[in-house]
Image (cartoon, rainbow, N blue to C red; front, side, top):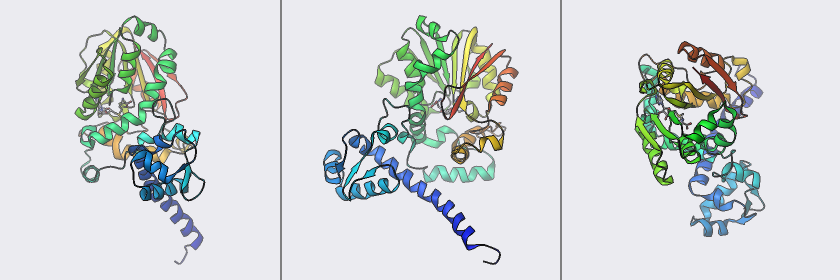
Length: 355
Ligand SMILES: C[S@@+](CC[C@H](N)C(=O)[O-])C[C@H]1O[C@@H](n2cnc3c(N)ncnc32)[C@H](O)[C@@H]1O
C-alpha cells in the first residue's frame, strides 16, 4: 500500500463498483420492461406487492425483491416494505412507450449474449468487427426500441417540418429511401403519415429487415418495401426525393461509398437527411457529455464493430461523425449544400444535405 492513500483507493473502488451496480440495475430495468411491471404500475398510485402479483401473474416474493431494488436505485418510490409507486415522471421514462419521447426502458435489452461477447473479444485480436446481423435479433429489437420514440413522435411533428419543402413533397407523393433502416420505425411513421409516398428501406442486416417487415405487416402498410442491401449499392435512379440515414453512417464500413451512392440515387432537388450522434471531434468538449462513457461503450460493443466488419473499414464508431466530418463526407460526394439542425434531441444532430 506504500504511496497509495487508503482514501484514494476507496474512492476509485467506489467509482468502479458503481458501474457494476449499473449493470445490475440495468438488468432489473430489463425485467421490469419485459415482464410489463412498469406498465402495470403506470397511473395507479401506490401498489402493494400482492396486488402487483395479481395484476401481472408474477410471484409476489420475486416482485417484492425487484421493487425494493428499484426503490434502492431511486426508480420507484417506496411507501413501506410492501407498497411502492411508479411516479408520473418515472412512468414517462419507464412505461409510456407509445406517447413519451423520454421513454428509455426499451433500450435495456438484458445484456449481450456470451457468443457475441466472444466474437467481440476476437475482434480485438483480428481487427475485424461483428456486423449488426451477427449481433442478432435482440440487438436489432433493442436498437429499434431505443431510437423508436424520436422516429415515432418527433419525425412528422418537428424534424420533417424543419426541412426545406420536404413535407409538401411527401404529402403530394414522393419517393423515400431509408438507408440503414434497422427495425423500420422511421419508414413506418413516414408511410403512415404520407400514404401517397413510396418508401423503400435498405439494410445490410437480415435481422433488421425481418423486424422491419413484421412492423409494416402489423400496421397493414402497403406503400413500403425492403431490400437487404448496403447503402453502397443503391440503384442510380436520380429520382429519390428524400434519402434518410439515421444513426447508421458511423456504423458503415464505407460511409463514403454510401454518400456517393446516395448522390447517384437522389433527384436534383432531393434532400438527404442525416441523423448522427452529437459529438464535436474534440475530447474536452465531448467530455462535458455525462454519458460519454456509455457512447464509447455502444461504440466498442456495437457501432465500431460494424464499422470495422470489413478489412478496410473506415471505423468511424459512435462518436466519429461529428459535423465537420459529416460535411467533409458529403462534399467529397459532390453534394453542394449542408445545413446542421439542432432539434433538441439530446443524443443526435441532424444534417440537411442537398445536391
Ligand atoms: C444503429 S442502427 C440504426 C437503425 C435505424 N436507422 C434506427 O434509427 O433505428 C444501424 C443500422 O445500420 C445498418 N448498416 C450498417 N452498415 C450498413 C450499410 N453499409 N448499409 C446499410 N445498412 C447498414 C445496420 O445493419 C443497422 O441496422
